[in-house]
Length: 341
Ligand SMILES: Nc1ncnc2c1ncn2[C@@H]1O[C@H](COP(=O)(O)OP(=O)(O)O)[C@@H](O)[C@H]1O
Ligand SMILES: [Mg+2]
Image (cartoon, rainbow, N blue to C red; front, side, top):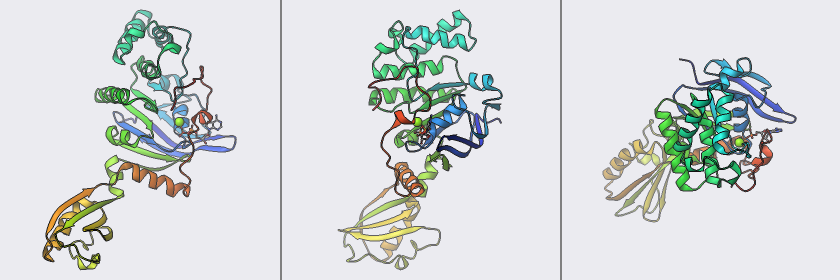
């Protein structure tokens, strides 16, 4: 099957910044794919190469088998994109903006009008159809960006931080909407730094940092890479932490135990795949005559794994300031005032 997105050794160099440093990525058709990374990682550049706003410096990039430069129109027609920055013609009623967009993609006038109404309804701003973009509230602007991405009924929907700075209600509305789209077959590429969002929505995530892919995995696989915390409350807690070697089942070679500590009246074991270690821990403690009052396993979050991975890669330098305006590669048609967080 042709991948929705396929890149090989994709590179982009701006004057002195290597924004993409050899990215090879395959996004399967029909998937809900997350592209995660700190500010400046290269996410927006990656998207802009796909939609033809930025020329790659090297490598290959295809959308449903069409090269994004050599077969620009075919590749572009397959994509609906809701960009991070608002680049909207603000002087026309939003319904007209949608009709223009549809016309540009070769959709006949009557159908363009129907589609415009349909997508405005879908994102919940149909009653604002005669309003200029400028006059919409921040949340409505976000909804409109999604409507515009949907007007061509794209097979690939790309959302660049669609929920940055939006309120909880809108975030959940957007999640429901894109989940529905994905269930009806649309491939989704979502960039976000809300880890909760990736965890909840994505089948697969790629972590990008300084233009390089650190990993591609399911959220579940990533969470398995970080240690879980097993906390056991005992009737008679030991005065000092038992050595792992004194817990024969826990010491099993199949387990990856990081530490065993006593914290107050609780025994805390840090181990990968804590759900598999816990039964053996119970067995060992029971064998030693301990009575267990309570047991709790808390899993590593995707957030912790993400922070850990990007920190390792950047030498403690991951927490860059929010500076997205400066990182925007193409000037927006309309620069926007107070909408971003
Ligand atoms: N037009 C540009 N000119 C110069 N540098 C740019 C331009 N666009 C982006 N960059 C730089 O490329 C890197 C990646 O930026 P970007 O793709 O916007 O990252 P992200 O979307 O992950 O925050 C950053 O260091 C950014 O400053
Ligand atoms: Mg960006």
